Image (cartoon, rainbow, N blue to C red; front, side, top):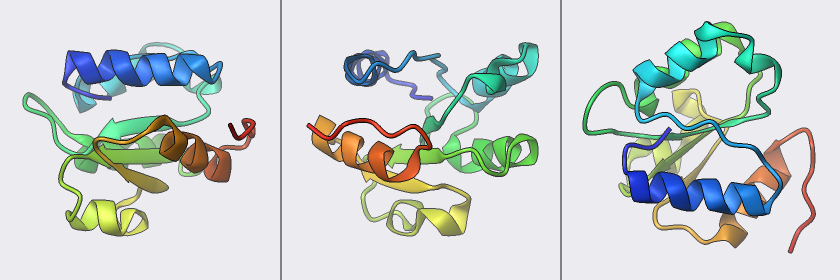
Length: 123
């Protein structure tokens, strides 16, 4: 979940290089529509959410709804606000881990390697 189309594409490209399929959403409302519209959650191994978005619900609020559906789902928060408490202490806000934007693919790999059930090879 990212509201900036350029960042959406970049993150999708990074995850694609790691052999992940990506479902894009721009805000929390879109994310919840996707989740509730079908059995999407059956195939989802994790979520990445922007902490704040320009239009609609951001990750801080959306993670609460995701946790009601799947408390064990790895949900990662990303933000340009590197000193925001949710980035510094993601677990206190319902997230699994965090990355500050901009981030390198190596940081993304390390986070996913540590927290996802299906491990990816380290590059």
